[in-house]
Image (cartoon, rainbow, N blue to C red; front, top):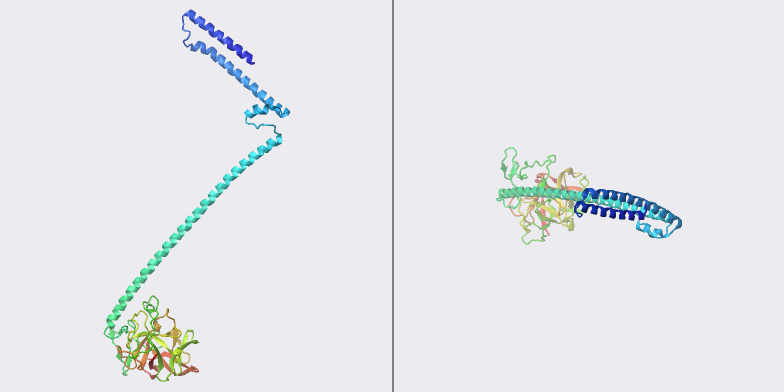
Length: 429
């Protein structure tokens, strides 16, 4: 079909329309009124023919374009600059190799885009996993912190309860002993058979009978009657200060809290001594205490301190019946005794120097008594013959003519405190 035939058909339509208008006038109809049936029929048919013709033209053009494109690749004419440019094809002359290269580049770009998306996805997953890990760690740390605070609160509560009971016990002890003349004198002993308190009494032979610690059976003074220190009367959580001022000399010759003294054995004349070069051989591996020479040297001095949990002011007067500790000035250890370890030659309970200013227990407690009578409540002064009674066992500081080596005289904890070898005298520094 050609473009000329299209124009002829248009002229024929105009002639037909003019004839229809003339016939309309002849029959008296309005030429301008719509004639849907008669007019649309020929037009629809005519439009259909045009559509068919248009399709043929389009087919012809596609065929022609295909021929031109083939001709272009073969001859390289300028058709690429016209029809192909309108179809988004690149301008200019390209070989088959360049087109394939462009296609590969396009594929590489597509692969790079997909790889980038995949990498972002992996990074997002990793970030999410790390966030979950950090959240769990933070949650565990918070839970651990809460548990720690709860444990600390529970420990503090228990400590407060123990301290309350200790204050009540101390108040009760002071109330019971307020008429005995000492600020920390031991309470009367408990008679386990009758369950009542008894005051210090005389032995049947006329000797002094010291009171046992409160709530414990009377002293038996036997080495096989093993008694243990009360753990509540140690330096742990004790209100007693770790240090007291050292008091040297006294014009009134009175022994006070903080006084620096030496102890001379009354029978042998040797001074109570310890040093770092001598240790026990019994298995306790503590610092040995022994009698040494007849003139005091720097290792013969001891400071008078209060018992654990007692809080007297420095310089308080010490009366007989008072529990004290003796701390070695040079080494800082306390005069100490215990069961289960016996001096090699005598078989008696050993005496050692133990602990330090931060570590002390009830086996460091000694009750000072006037020899033969106790004299509880009376003031302790220089030169008086005294007995130092181990508070836990009830036995006394003892020495004798039993030499461990040269100038090393045996000192033990033994007996009721009635022998001449139990006597000691105090000298003030």
